[in-house]
Image (cartoon, rainbow, N blue to C red; front, side):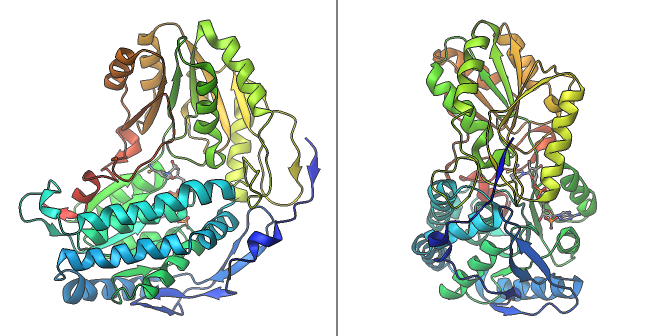
Length: 478
Ligand code: TAP
């Protein structure tokens, strides 16, 4: 694999104004951390330091939770839903107005292609705020009884793969339902959450309703364990989700967990082949495969295996890996050196266990963190690459003969977040959707999101739903 020097596209970079350092956003203002040290956030495409960010320690967490409590008791909790809605609409419009800048910032800090942050992430972020703004004065229809009440202070911890989208999924329903929040973004992607803090100021959101505290895992731990918190909403790995569930067991905190996945993308012999190949590519290479619901296990019916694989490889050969700010890029940078190491390690395990590894010829930049689109064939269900979440642009291919066998293989995983079915038969789609133990089943499409549609897992993929009316239930007392 050859390498070239990466030079970020200068014209898009010019529309963001990144400060050299950021404080914590507590009680409506940016403040210095009291007892934490600053840490650096880098562009994964160039390894350039983008900014220094404060690490919140226990005293800062306490300050943020107290600010959220005060805002809940005095302002946000008692405020009529129609007035809360006005703030949420204002935030949604400000996101739309600043969407070009936010998309560039997201791509710089996360490494995802600008085409995705601009056309997928940002529109969905704004849509989420618009959608929940509409609910704020209609909570009696949210399914939590006739007199729904908010829970209080929500502690929200999110991962690095969709920084602003995960923030929207957490903050919009919480505020619509009348809760206040303290949110911790992931250590490697804090910048768009801090830009969102500025948007809260622009929207004149009352101080303390939204607090953003940056830091690593220990900041998240201090936040979810704080006794002033009524609700914990977490998205991240199954290992950390399990630790959080243990930490809050025996308290009266309400918890929702959105965890990992190992989705089966199932292709039947009657599927429309061109559309299916696009769906496979989108299913695993969207966002470099850093997607909890990624279609990372491809199950292909034996009779069309050769044709699907040949077409898939041809299509993979056309994918462009490189500068996240270039509009022609299909696959951007891997988010961090640690994540790259994990993808490399599991890919090596795939080879060692006897699967056949293939990537198209492609040039990778010399600086930054990169991994080529990769497919493994000859994978068996016992292989680690068929069982563990790789969270990178790596696809494992298995085969099946009958629909029953497809269902058995698809469900043979500790996860249960999503699945995809490709077939021409409507009756088969409905049958499969009933058989598959997955929170979301896509039919003849993949990685399609909408704020009206609940999203969440079975088994080790977590519990609770985000999105739609169901997303409000997690923030309301029954
Ligand atoms: P994690 O390592 O679990 O981190 C998620 C967040 O939790 C980060 O903000 C992290 O801080 C923080 N954290 C770490 N240890 C903690 C602790 N003991 N207590 C409280 N917070 C803690 O996951 P990740 O690597 O960022 O994200 C990838 C994982 O998220 C994948 O498994 C993926 O499937 C899952 N994910 C799931 C979904 C849904 S909707 N199910 C969506 C996206 C991602 P630091 O970043 O600073 O360590």
